[in-house]
Amino acid sequence: MSDSKTESRELIFSILKYNPRDFDSKPGFVEYKLMETAGMTLFIALNQIRSTLDADLSFDFVCRAGICGSCGMIINGKPLLACRTLTSSYPDGKIQIMPMPAFELIKDLSVNTGKWMNDMSKRVESWIHSNEEKDIRTIEERVDPDQADKTFELDRCIECGLCITSCSTALMRHDFVGAAGLNRVARFHADPHDTRTDEDYYELVGDDDGIFGCMSLMACEDNCPKHLPLQEKISYLRRKLVSVK
Image (cartoon, rainbow, N blue to C red):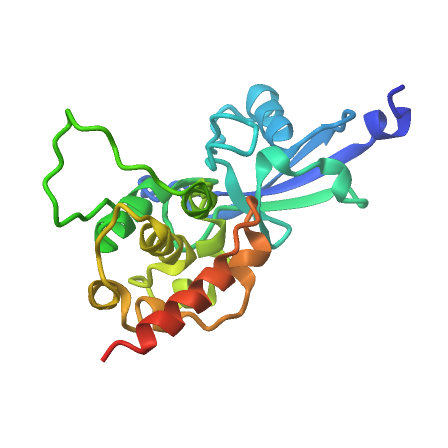
């Protein structure tokens, strides 16, 4: 049975609107009022606002299932996925929404995480490196299931950007690869198909913009929607690379 109190409650949204490509646009908060329904998420609420109150409102979404990572935003000061955030989590019904910092602002709540992730991917050379030439006609080498699981675990990253936008170092240093980049390094470090050595990885991330820039404040892991062991892997990589002479 639906909760009638939940259905009748009025929500007040304060959303930052700004179009950096429009010279006349000035950043500012716009208030919207919406009636809450049972099971309402921020994804549903934003779509209703755009459909009924402001067709100009910009934000990103694809899957609405916490898989694509497109709907990351700052909700009452905390980086979250809109599709996995219930409006019922806010007892006073007041919800402030802002775009994620650290990424290029496209418009309103929409940011270009794709450009950041692409640059990071190139920076850490996010592809298999092998000393052997592979013949596509040969059968692939068997990988131990436990070893494969270690790789697949880190591949669960959806590149939503929440770990980056919650990272103090990433906000201060534009070139910092962040937890997403270091997780990618750990993924290939664990992959038996990749023949790179610790020295090779040191050349990629053995500096203050890489593994030694992390201040271990835990914000990345605290805000990861997939609960990846980010700090564990960052600590592991730091121990491995600090020993490189």
